[in-house]
Every structure is written in structure tokens, then in C-alpha cells.
Figure (tube, rainbow, N blue to C red):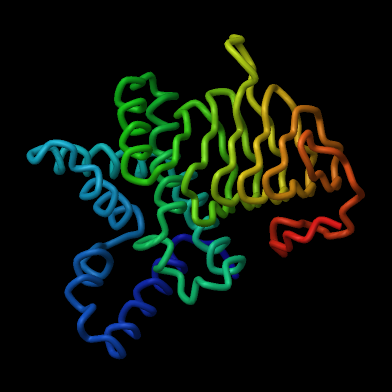
Length: 260
């Protein structure tokens, strides 16, 4: 499906209207969360600011910060649109496009991180770190605002995902719960993993240090990876060992966790 934000926004609204016709009890909720808004940016800013209402009178301030950041950085909405499509196409439990926006904490955490990353780059670092703290508190996902993310990311289930300050994730990566992209100790500088495009990382995997996970590789659940992984490799075990070469074009798209 084309990831054009305006086209996707129309699809979200059509799906919401169709849902209301089947489930009238959801009318008020869907109107408040989606249909009353004029754009995807506005819907995202509203939903996140209401969730992160850390002071009773600060919601409007957060909404304005979020909406301003989204409007000034259209690449964020392009990435968010790709993330919504990734959830819909890769997660068999996702039956429509508005569920990630309204219900999936992995998507919400990644979206909030995209805003925090923009604030970090704009030297609003205390606000960015505070947003990181809120995401950790509400969604159990801890991503440093300096970490870099591509588009088309599926963070499925999400609980316990951690990414350190110098970590980076390429386009079209699928990651499951309990994954850590961390350091190996107290070292400074560039100390976190670099995950290239098309990678699939299974639940509970720990990838540690300034290492590269080559494109279109597959990391098995609960593996501990401490060394560079060549492109299109399959890695399993503790410590992780290469057990073969992936024949899939992009394991992240097929989301097949069988590592044999």
C-alpha cells in the first residue's frame, strides 16, 4: 500500500466510520481520538499529549509542542505513515490502520521517540529526556532521544524494549518485546548497536556494543549478540552464533521466527 500520509489519513477515517456502524458504543471514543481532528499530525499530537499529561494544566502545552514539531518536520509523518502500514501488513492481529495509532503501545512509543529525537536535535534536550521518561513510564519502552530510527518500523508488543544513545535502526525493521540494543559497560562515545534495514529481531534478544547487524539478517529469540553479524545471516544462541544464511528477501517483512 502507498504510504502517502494524506491517503492514509483518509483510510483511517473511513475505517473509523465503518467501525462505528458496527460498534456504535465506540462512537464517542473514535470521534474524540480520531474523527474530530483535521490531520494525522493533529491526531497524533492530541493522543500523545493526553497520555503524557504529567501536570493537569500542561496538556495544551504538550499538544502545541507535539503539533509544532510534527508540522515543522514532515519527514516524521512520512515515517509514522510507514510505521502504520508496517503494523497493518506484518502483524496478523492488526485488522485496520487506526489500531496502531489508537491502541498499539509499540507504535505510540516509536512515534513519541520520533518527536523526542527532533527535540534533541533542536537542542531542547531536557524536554526530550523528559519525554523519554514519560514513554518509559507509560509504555515500558526506553529509547534514548538521540537514538536514530528509520521508517517502516514494527515494534510488536513492545514491553521491555531498550535502545541506547548511539543505537540506530534502519528502514523496515521488525522488533519484538524484550529486545535490548545496549552497551557492554561504562564506555563513552559510540557504544551501541547499528541495525541495518530489513532485520528481524526476536523477542528477548540482547544486542550489545558498537556492532553492526547486517541488512536482512535474522536474530533468534533470546539470543545474545556481541559481534558483528554479516548481511543476510541467521544468529541464535548465547552467545549468538551464525547458523546459516537467510534466503528471505527481508525477514522483517515475513516475520518468520523459525531460525533453522
